[in-house]
Length: 151
Picture (cartoon, rainbow, N blue to C red):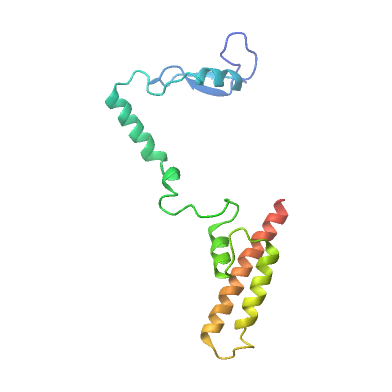
């Protein structure tokens, strides 16, 4: 085990920190001393304006996808607890994104009864709608079971 490089510290040094801006050499600090060291760290120290702008552009090209995801519609409404498939299923059942499972079950039963093949025999549109409601309910039921299992 490596010891923290800070003089007088005997904690494990498991947090690497660069010795200088453009150097591959690293200090190895404990978490407390790494935070202290990095608090004043300037990633662009020693670079002129053009080099700093180029480095920033390179960094953004590699990791800006998450930041830009909301712009391109990857992020959806809700609080982040539901997947995209769950949100589509809720939309198919005509529910809000924060609907609880009792409301989901009630909406599914109501809609499925209206278009059930026994109620509307030979109606292809009704059969398609019934399959849509059935699939939406299965997606939401499986998600609810996963939540119960984790929680």
